[in-house]
Image (tube, rainbow, N blue to C red; front, side):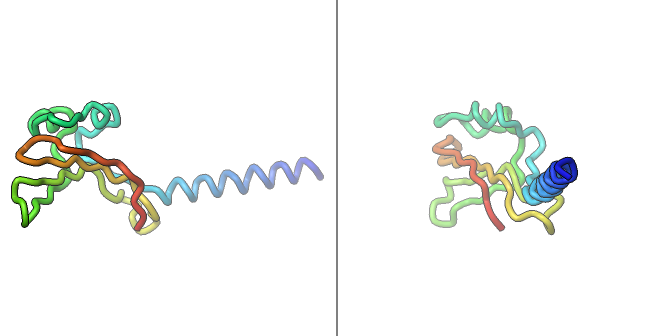
Amino acid sequence: MRAFAVIGVVLIVTVLGIGLSKSFSTRYSRGYSEEGFKRVEIGMSQAEVRAVLGIPHYSILSIYQPSNELAVYSMVGSEKRFAIAYQHCEVHFSNDVVVGKSKRLRFR
């Protein structure tokens, strides 16, 4: 009887684990890596960042300050209909120089 309980618990944990892993789906831009993101520092040029991380999925320019740009290196993955969250990675530029970066879990 105890063996069935253990098997049941293992089965439940496995099913929940597979379900949760499908709930977090992130698609990174080509060339992106965690090591590269860690190497991005304030003061780097946009060309230096692209050499490390590649081209972002998309960039957003500020309409109020056109010299400010937000480069987004991740988005919801291919399993988007099941995803409840994804890892959002972005680099902030002003006058083509890094002024900040952020990485956070983003919920849909």
